[in-house]
Image 1 (cartoon, rainbow, N blue to C red):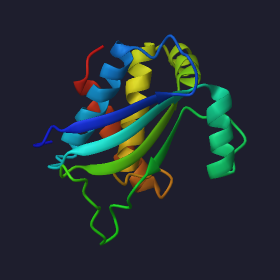
Image 2: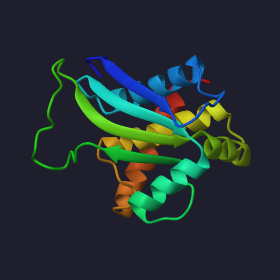
Image 3: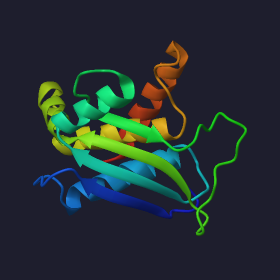
Image 4: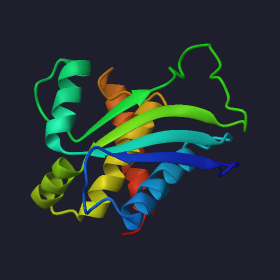
Length: 160
C-alpha cells in the first residue's frame, strides 16, 4: 500500500486478557500486509471487535441464519465489484468495514491445528480483510482458490 495510513478502531465485547497491545499490533500488521498484497494505494479505516463464542454465535444467527459460533465475521462497507466508487473520508481514506473475531474460537482452533494463538488471529484477520476487499470463497471454487492462495501468501510474510 503506497499510502500506509491505516486507522483501526478496536473494541471488545467484554474484558479479555488477550486484548493487549501485542494482539492489536498483530492485527494491524495482518491488515497492512493484506492491503499491501492487494497493492492498494489508498488509506483505510477498519473496525475490529474482539468477542467470545456466545457473541459471535448471535451475530452469525442474526446475519447469516447460522446457529453456531464461527471464528470471524466480515461486514464490508462496499462491493468492490460494483462500478460505484467508494466514498472517501475527509483524510482521503476509505472505510472498508468491520471485522469481528471470536478470540475464544481462535484459541480453540489454534490448539486444534497446532498454531500459535497469535498466528491464528492474524490468519483470521487476513481472511476477513480479504472479504472486506471483495474476496468471497463462497461464490465459486475459483474464488475459494484465489482467497486461499492470497491467505497463504500473506501469512507467510508475517513472523510470530
